[in-house]
Structure formats: structure tokens, C-alpha cells
Length: 322
Image (tube, rainbow, N blue to C red; front, side, top):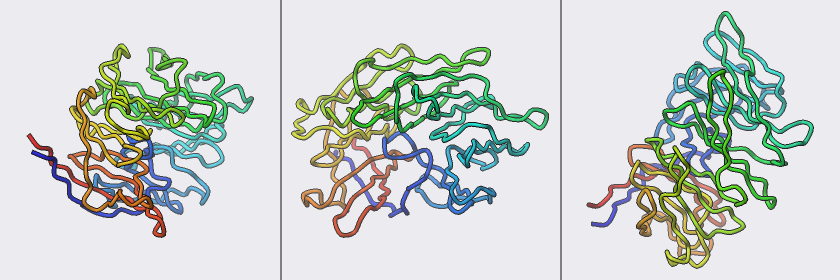
């Protein structure tokens, strides 16, 4: 039985929403607009908001579902909890995620231009303000644009540091006792994209870097061993596999075929099949899928580009065949 896909809604632009959707794993749940922090539902519909007092140029980095805790770049690193706001002297923070036990992982460029910084932040309490408790310098990660995904259950994260034509770093970052940071590079010497973590936390999806769109692979979280791979050649994809990919659930994931659209694959990439979206005619050279992102409950969004009409965010629901 073929999978059945229906269009649920056309959502507003996700520009500035966090976690960022363009790699696939960042299921967007929050956005900041003129100082108002809003939550988004699994269908990307408004689900509550608060006024932040942030400047118009502030950039949201991370937030909690109840909107009581959030981090933003506002000249410095603004850390807000129910206990109050602390501004930390961190310049140009570019990504963050909230972790368990009142911690957050924040990334920022190193002002001495040695690379990119990973900062472990204690969010603070009424008795003790927020502070940076550990840091790690990723050397040679120059001019990177960071992307961070929190592990769903461990005090850990997946950090992607793409550097354009200079390649990329993908890192597993674990919080250690102390607390401190243990940083492990995935696929050293190769340029890959850390696209997503499976909902059960057991798998990492790595998609190909744009300079070589040939192979997607899945690694086991615990030991980073490879559990499966899919090559564009074996899948009959003449142009290749895009960098955007997402776990639909623990057993299925979505990839983007650069030429033809979406692929549905099993969790370890042992099988894959093309998906047809009822609202997108990808035979038209003026229409493209730019990214895909699972949202939960068998729903997913795609960022579509239409020549003459611009970008649209389309939310779909999929029913899988037996």
C-alpha cells in the first residue's frame, strides 16, 4: 500500500524560527517578532506568546515550551528564566539549545578568529545568576554558521558548523561531570551535515555536504558506528541527495532528491522510495523543494520555491502503508 499524503496547511515563513528547519532536524517551535516571543504548534500555528522587552535587532536562539525560559542574542547573550534576566558578555552568539538540569549549550564565533566556541551555560536561579561554566574551542572552524540540536533525552547535543566552500565540522557534544564538555568529531576529514537525531535518541542522520551530494548515512548515537548508508547512484538519483533530511519517526526518515523531490527511507537506509506531494509539480523546472522537516505525529513541512511566487512552507500529514 502506497503512503498517503495530504496537505494540512500553508504556514507563514519560518525565517528566524528556532530550531532552524533548513537542515531538517530542527523542528521549529518558536519565533521572535518585534520583541514578541511566540510558540508554534506541530502544524506551525500560533500557540501562545509573551512580550520579551528585547530590541528590534535581537535574534532568538532557544526557548522552552512554556516560554518561561529563553536565550537571545541582543548585543550580549540574554538569558531569561522565571528568576529574571541575565546578560552575559558573549558576543554574536549564533545558536543554542536547552539541556536538562538547568543548562544550555551556546555557540559563538571566537573573537580572536581561532575558530568557533561551544559554551555551557548554567541558566541560573533566584539566588545565582546565569553564568558560563565551561567552554570548548573548535579550532579552524572559521566563518562557520552554527546549527545545534539537543539530544531528546541525554545531556548532549549535535552541533553542525558549516563553513561554505571550506567544508564543515559535525560534533557530538556531551555534558560531563563538573560540569564540562566532551566533544567528539563525526567523520573527521570528511564534509558532512548533521541533519537530525532520531526521536528515541538512538540514531544520527548525516546528509551529504553540498560539494559532494552523493551519500547519506546513519550512525548509532552511543558509539558513532555506521548502521546504514544510501548512495545517490544506488538510489538512481542523477543529481544527488540534498543536505536537508529528517527522521519522520523512529523507523522512517525523509530525504530530498535534488532533482525529483522527497524520498521516504527506513531508519538505517536499507530501503527508500520516492514520495509524491499532491500540491507540488516538481516536473516544472521552476519549482523546487529546498528543505524538509518532520514536525511530529506523522506531519512534516517542506520549504518550496515557486518561480514568480517565492517561498512557501507547506505542512503535510503522511499515512504509511503496511
